[in-house]
Length: 226
Image 1 (tube, one colour):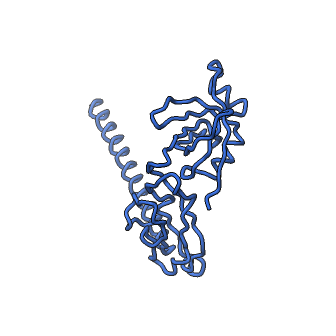
Image 2 (cartoon, helix red, strand yellow; image 1 turned 30 degrees about the vertical axis):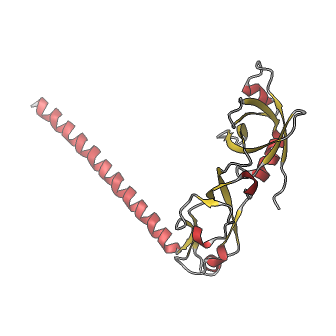
Image 3 (cartoon, one colour; image 1 turned 30 degrees about the horizontal axis):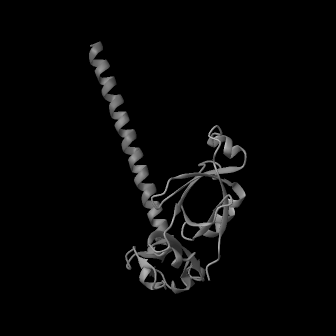
């Protein structure tokens, strides 16, 4: 059963307050749009939105209540963050029609232990973190489990076709898309060594080129003196 996630908001009526002022006061500015209705500027308490977003992500419905109005169904469409502090600076919310399908990304929940990693020292490579699907809003789920215990040898992989997906979710990703795999440590080491060698060769070429240029310049000066 999907948990009900509620979130309270206020409309941003004071246009004199800049977004910077709002953030200094512990708030998060937001915009609500969708369903051909007018956009609404909102304001959240940082803690309230942070807690709701931690549960909902961008694939679960949120019951948004603006002031004393009746709650409406929305999903988080975009979250902007400060590149240094990693704090949330702005949010986009989208109104949903419960009778129309929407496209969302559902995060993978990696569970279980891989024998190839635990006992053989293999390295886990995650090629995907989310699954793109189309679904009615009411059929959305919070996460999709990916069992890593299936990775029992080097070269083993888990594709989209290997995981269980509810029938009411329509796949957008290819069934052959690779989610996770295990590789031998030496392969990674060899790749790093190749990069190092390539880098050294490149540096040598650059140094040689610079020396050649310098030599030509000196040659021109000598001819000028004669």
